[in-house]
Length: 387
Image (tube, rainbow, N blue to C red):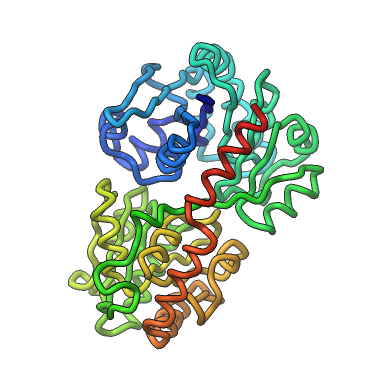
C-alpha cells in the first residue's frame, strides 16, 4: 500500500488544537474527525493509500494508531525555536519576518521529521500550504514532496524562493483556477484538484432538497473573527426578523462572539454548539438549515460549504474567487458583494426567495462536480505517479 505522510501546517499541535480549540491530544485522537485531514485519510484509504497525519509538537513525541485505524505522529519541534517563536509571535508583521519564522519551523522539525519518515517507510510527503517559508525548507527533503493549497495565499508572503522550491516539488495541487494561475506565475505547473465531499453520507433528509426548511442559518467555522467574520453573521440576524442561527465551532474569539450576541440582544436566537465531533449531528444541522452563511475573508474550497450543498442547503458566501467557482449567485446560492451584516442579510433573503429551486440546484451542483467518488481517485493517482 502506498504510504503518504500529511504534515499539518500548525506551528505545534498545542498552539492550534489545545490553546486555540481546547482539544487535548487524547480527545483529538479519540473524537476529532471533522476536518480536511481526517476526511482525506478516510477517502484515500478506500483508494488503497494510507495517509499518516503528522503534527509538530512542543510536548512529547509519539506515534499512535487510533481505534478506527488511522496513524498519527507527533513530531518534536526543537525547543529553542519554540521559545523564540512564541516570544516573537506578537510582533511578526512583515513578510520577511513571517518567512523567517516559518523557515525556522521547517528547520526545527526537519531532523526528526526525516528520521520518522524513514521509520514509517513513507513514500510521499504531503505538505499543507505551499506559500509558506516552511515549504521552501521542507521541499528540499530527499523524497517526493507534494505541496497543497488549503486556503493560504501569496498575499503578505515572501516569494523570492518560490521558483526554486516549486521546481523541487514533485507536484503542487491547487483548489481553484485563480490559484493555479497564481502559482504558475512562479514557474509552477499545479494540478487543479479541489476538495471533495462524501455525498453518500452528506445528503438531504426525508423529503429531499424540496422539503421546506425552517428559518435557521448555520455557520461552521473556527472562531477567528478577522478570517471567518462570525460576528458579522451574528449581526446580520438583527436584520432578519424571525430567523435563528446555529454556530458550530470553537476558537480564540469565542468570547467575542458571545459578547456580540449579548450586545445585540440575540441570546434567544443564537445557539453556540462548540466543535461538533459527531458527523451525524453535523449532518442534521446542515439538513435543518435554510442556508449556510460563511462570509470569510479568504478560503480554499470550503468543506463546510460542500457538506451543506450535499445536504441540499444553499450557501451564502463572500464574493471571493474561490466561492465564485462554487456558487452561481441567485441560482444555487448567493454571494455577498459586501461582507457586512446588511449584505449578508440581503443575500439570505435572496436564497429564501429562491426556495426549493435553489436547494435543488445546490445539491445538483455538488453531486456533479465535488463528490469524493470522483475526486479521491484523482488524488490517489497523483500521489502514486509522484511516488
